[in-house]
Structures are given as C-alpha cells and as structure tokens.
Image (cartoon, rainbow, N blue to C red; front, side, top):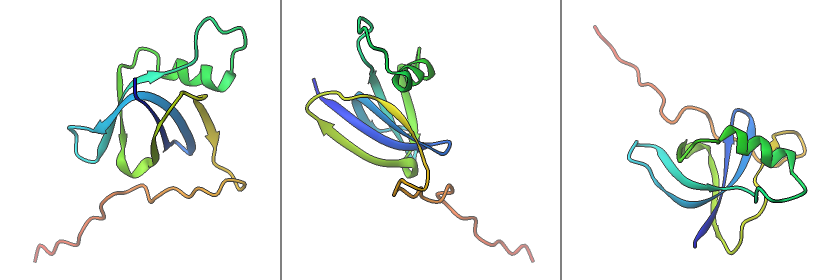
Length: 109
C-alpha cells in the first residue's frame, strides 16, 4: 500500500496528514485526499493532537484542499503521527496569499 504525507495550511495552522491516495481533484484548484490514515484504535497511549484530527475528519471519505494551501506532498515508507502545528514565530513557514486570483479592473464606460 502506498502512503502519502500531506502538509497544508488550514485556518492558521499546519496540518500533517497521512493518506492512501492524493490526486488532482475534479474541482479546479484543489487536490483530493482520500483514505486518511490514523493510529490504531487498540493503542494504549492516545496522542491528543492526532485524536483531535481523527475527530475533525470522522466520517470523511475524501477531502479537497486548495492547491495554494498545500506545502508539501511526500510518498513515505511508513505512516507517522498526524498532527496540527500552530504557526508561530518559531516556525519558518509562510503561507501563500489567500487569494489565487486578483480581480482585474473593468471599465464600464
């Protein structure tokens, strides 16, 4: 099974997710992430950040993320911990501007 690590910005935080499939979505400007992978339910130790992500994406079979929010997509050998990282002064990641297109001037004269 192929495993992908996807890093993207969402609401001022950096999301690090693992999934079985990543591809360009049918909706222009978005990537589709399908088959999200989280830790085993039988684990004795529960990671609160991963549990928060698991709850946020419960019932989601696939999600669409804007291309301009994606920082990186890697194919990895094994799954790591999914997590949410707050963007702060200690991080060296700067988000792209939020608008993909700028409106042009229209003269209706």
